[in-house]
Image (cartoon, rainbow, N blue to C red; front, side, top):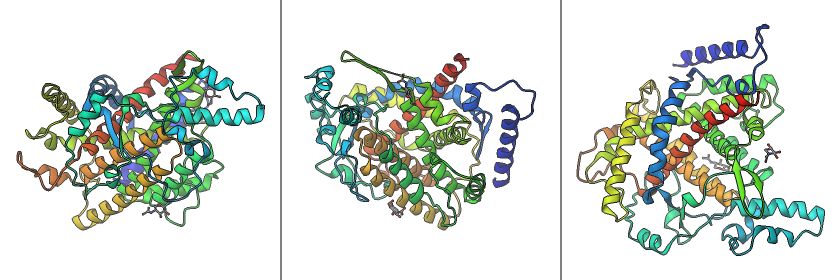
Length: 468
Ligand SMILES: *[C@@H]1O[C@H](CO)[C@@H](O)[C@H](O)[C@H]1NC(C)=O
Ligand SMILES: *[C@@H]1O[C@H](CO)[C@@H](O)[C@H](O)[C@H]1NC(C)=O
């Protein structure tokens, strides 16, 4: 496996050198090629190719998945956004203001009037405006209709989360509340700068199986790295066992996905009448262009495909759990629940039919003792990362961060339980393997985010092609 990997990377590198004009004769590359130069053909650690994934995702999976995620079962996610950050206490001023938790009755006062009221000092004004924007855009809309509130009370919560990759006590807390994910889309929030950096740095630096000997910052966004450092880093990464390498790539893929969303749902224009969200090509290029990011951008995009494939693989492995006759997507509406289950199974069978071409023995399936140790390592790392999410100052980012980490954790729980799932009884209780409602909702919504990002890449490709 390792050798094949190195070979593939070498091959991709050669293709890239040719494509980027180092051969001399080629015409200058276009902006689109610069972002996607390495992101075509085969992916490392898997022999699937990007074009097949794009077709499969964008046309067959994405539309059905969107429909499923709009259903009541999947749109309400219970989350505790009020847990204090356990690691440090200088969370940004913006996030600390109560305003971000409870939206300040934004429908009552037109935005234009609100922002007019503090335009007296230009310096203060800029600061406040930035903060205010981050606060307002980052706020979580917690409104649920009375009907929904009653319904969620009925929902069974069979929670045996001993095996959970993330913090289970989260949802038992009186502070935990249901939020409507459709009312709180993941998009540009204005949350950036040192605070956002710090979160990603801590995740990469302290939670990614990084050995002491590597000095280079793991956060691929950090700049000023020498070429030698970079080579050490990538050879270190290659030397890791496939799962630990996977861990880094999963985090990087998640990071990339979040940034694709922010670039695709950018706040382009704001008047007191309306907000206009859309694609910001400059923002996308700053994060993913091969030259602007010194080669990191295309790697990030490859990791996005990687996390896509890992979550896809988890979904294909967990089919027996959802196929059991006593499994319900329970909301109390029998007809709707049955229809949703049918749609869910349809999606899962579609996924199962996708030829993944992973080496079946390469992930999470080493000898039993080693696998258990690895599983425990992963679990601790994930719990930690989900707690780091409590330090995110922007509440909407915190919501989606927690959800996606839980979803990814659930995917890994599935991959580490392959054998248990395969041996599950066809009916009756399953004591060995179980998923809670929270895990199911986060698993599918997290995959929905990644699937949306893959779809958005196509949109960006087209936009970038048109600017030339
Ligand atoms: C958990 O995160 C904290 C803060 O970043 C770090 O100090 C600690 O080493 C991490 N623990 C594990 C198991 O990753
Ligand atoms: C797009 O993003 C860049 C930052 O990357 C920003 O400077 C620019 O104003 C944005 N464009 C629009 C139309 O908002």
